[in-house]
Amino acid sequence: MKSPPKRSPGPAGQQDQERSENPGFAARKVAADILGNVVHKKRTLDGEFDAASGHSGLRALAGNDRSLVRAILGAALRHRGEISIILDRLLDRGIPEKTGRVLDILHVAIAQMLYLDIPDRAAVSLAVEHAGADRRARPYKGLVNGVLRRLGRERDEVTADIDADIVNTPDWLMESWRAAYGAETAREIARAHQNEAALDLTVKSDPQGWAERLGGHVVGAGSVRLSRKGSVEAVEGFEDGEWWVQDAAAALPVHLLGDIRGLKAADLCAAPGGKTAQLALAGAEVTAVDISKGRLKRLEENMARLGLTVRTIASDLRDFVPDEPFDAILLDAPCGATGTIRRHPDLPWTKQAYDIEKLSEIQGDLLDRTVAWVKPGGVIVYCTCSLEPEEGEAQVEAFVERQAGKVRLEPIDAEEVGGLGHLITEAGYLRCLPCHAAGSGEDMKGMDGFFAARFRRL
Ligand SMILES: C[S@@+](CC[C@H](N)C(=O)[O-])C[C@H]1O[C@@H](n2cnc3c(N)ncnc32)[C@H](O)[C@@H]1O
Image (cartoon, rainbow, N blue to C red; front, side, top):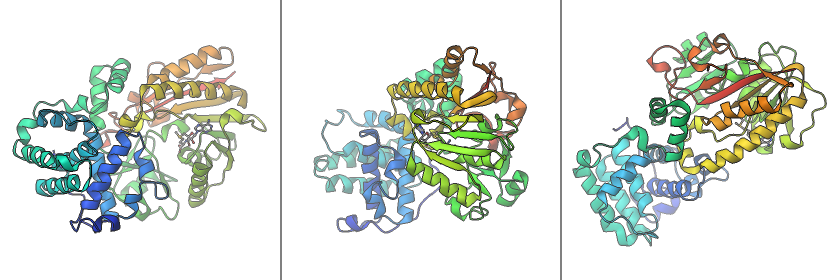
């Protein structure tokens, strides 16, 4: 169950050094705190890790301890269902409500013991110390010690017969995937979420050359896949703006617009600009629209690094009025993002079915608006990084019905997406799943869940 070591012990954060000399204590404390914020307060991991507005405890940690917090949270969230079952088996009478952080402390400790290469004694003693330092958890310090030591002793019995593929996904999501893709594929999707995603790059040119230079493979429709982890800024070509990070699946929708050299293209919901960069590189005159000024600023910084020029407009699309119609429109609509769980293991624990319903209404509204913004004969590509049919297949079927006589579906051909025929549905949509291969060969396995459909304006 354990994965290779990911840490070297770093200095404890300033605040916690006052309370504990034990190296690594501050990291465990911050991890338990963030876990609580994610699962109880529905805060996102990205938000908690934001340098400016994220969790204040993280700022006090050294870089290697921040990485340790990320690794612990990744394991605790990816295996949350398993850990809950293990805790049920270990806790004869459960834990009473209002016990402060006890459950979060236990989840963090078990994540280290079972899924990270951290010695049991370190995980247990830091958890016991943490319980002792927390006013409401203090009465359960003995219980934390007993439960974790028993797990250490009875690991095989306590972890036996757990269907990890199924239990780490909330029921509503598993049900949605079973209904959409069948039980076996739903299981494969959930299994794919147990692992982190590879690092995929979109390069300005010469994918094969960059793959050789960086020790990767060409996948998808010319993306470069690297297995390395760590800071992307340090990778050759970043500073010179030769590539940007973009999942192989996320790179496919722009290819569906065809030859856009010299055409006016709108990138709607554009930030942080992965697809904007592709459009500009393909020679289109790009207008990038996004509701978020902050995210648009990031898009502008990304374009500056890549040496690409685009026009940016900060606007809610529901207030947007283009000066003139476009030849091509890409709508990468806001969605539940359930296709990105490998990168965002917090997502299953922060989103609910209700969020998908609300978002699918917005998607329908935005998609309808694009019809008036594209020239007759022009093309609209709709895409989302979602696995839910309400945000994909069902969404576009309803669109075609509402806009009958104004748009027609233009089926996608496998040749347009690097020859990956398994990604094209019978209806001619692009449907990528996290368990799909991005090329041939075992190390090509995995891509973000994505949906795309193409329409021609009549
Ligand atoms: C899936 S992300 C876009 C990713 C981007 N296309 C890329 O490839 O890098 C969705 C974006 O939609 C934007 N957004 C959400 N609601 C919007 C609205 N009503 N009008 C315009 N943009 C919106 C969000 O700010 C967010 O940046």
